[in-house]
Image (cartoon, rainbow, N blue to C red; front, side, top):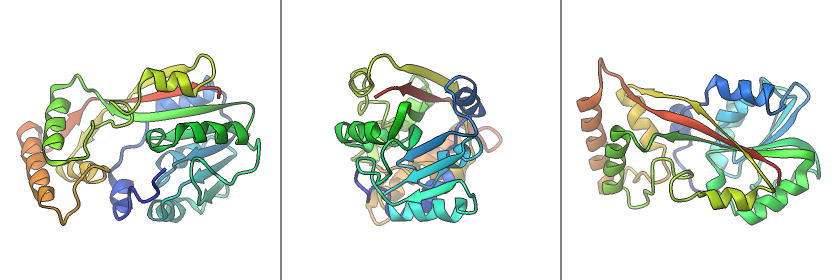
Length: 251
């Protein structure tokens, strides 16, 4: 995992990235087996967006994050919680003890990992019958609005490969099949995104593919996104269809 990917934009990431729907956590408790005695390693935990929710339903959450900027924000926001433990480490070498966690979560992060090394590390730190849970927020690529925004991003962002990078192009069904051992469970939960202009621009500024402020394309990108928002919003708000996808299995 490249620990420098989000340098300089951690505060933007924390402020504007969406969280996850209540239905996901209801499912994790009622069907996947998480409870008040569960120990979780949240890998690539970033600013703690998922970790924050897991702290309410689990006994202990190890938040493993190599990026200093991202990790410090999580520590600032969550260190008051007795069941939060921040770890400066990578997905491939978490520094956690062997067989110490019931679940491993990776939200918006699996596509950055060395998957072979990560799988080995999962096998090392998971307890018997422990599972890995991969999670993404993904805009509906069939939506005309999403397609139009993608075209804007493609025009101004050389590194753009899809507004749900981990789900479009970077991750395929074969990737899941090769990562998980045997069958795995797939669940999806509706999680529509409702933006004002500030939040809409902020979300795109938080993307790894967004040009930096010093680049010429940055202003052009923000202007194009602003024009799109103003053309499609109603009463100052814009809604985009979004789903939270969850993949659960053994490794």
